[in-house]
Image (cartoon, rainbow, N blue to C red; front, side, top):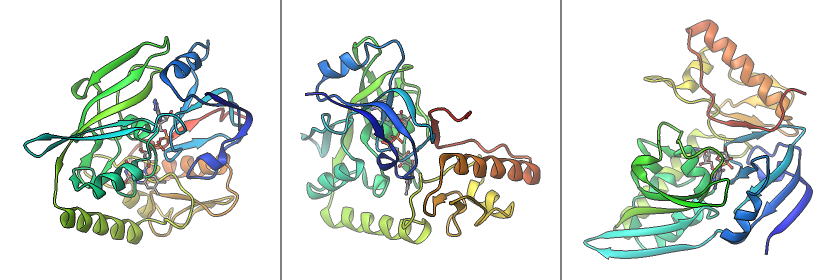
Length: 291
Ligand SMILES: Cc1cc2nc3c(=O)[nH]c(=O)nc-3n(C[C@H](O)[C@H](O)[C@H](O)COP(=O)(O)OP(=O)(O)OC[C@H]3O[C@@H](n4cnc5c(N)ncnc54)[C@H](O)[C@@H]3O)c2cc1C
């Protein structure tokens, strides 16, 4: 049954640990319940794992939908010839799927080890790292549009780009079919361990953040530009450019969304002044930032 929470804090539903209240946070558990959530004039905001979002201090007026409680099924089928077809609903955590696949010696999703968030968010963002991304393993994605109509979109039609996609405006991703392969248990474990070690070494994982704030410009790294613009450890309130990875803004304690946004704007200006490069934001601003 759908759960509706009113005036619900969102800070604790994001990896930044920042954000005001949602007028209504809705957890539909079935497609029929989800369709009902979409019968509103104003399209609801879909919250995944909140790992790529900066939610405003004044929160979100209107409805926020989370599929985390209802849309959690996974099926793993060996279809012969070493191919494995995985169907995962949008509310499944990427980390849980990685663990389930490792336990069944299914290879192909190791690259996503340590990427926080849910399947739905990973598809919208075309999440990836180290030369691999969701695009490489997606067979098709099922979405529900604002009018409650379900549609299956083949991978080639999802408009995947670098940390981007082009799903129909206002749709909710409900499920994805991924094409993976049988692998060797030891090889998979080794790969996962090495990715985990690299993340621990390179990323400030002990602090709340939303991962990389800016996309890497073609042929360069946003982190390098930010560092060379002298912004490492720059701070606004409790928002700070990480000393470990300059493309991460970390929440040192009680950072506000306004602090993070101000720091982002300073970084954009400094990098532009020094290198003439206009950094493109990877994290998404959600809610009202004018106040
Ligand atoms: C420590 C850390 C490390 C990270 N490392 C990486 C990395 O290596 N590579 C990488 O790509 N990213 C990385 N990220 C960023 C983040 O993990 C990814 O972008 C992730 O895929 C976001 O998923 P999410 O479910 O949290 O999406 P959210 O942040 O909740 O949402 C992102 C966008 O997708 C929309 N959305 C979410 N679910 C749905 C749905 N079901 N239907 C329609 N729209 C939806 C939201 O409305 C929003 O616009 C990192 C983040 C952190 C905190």
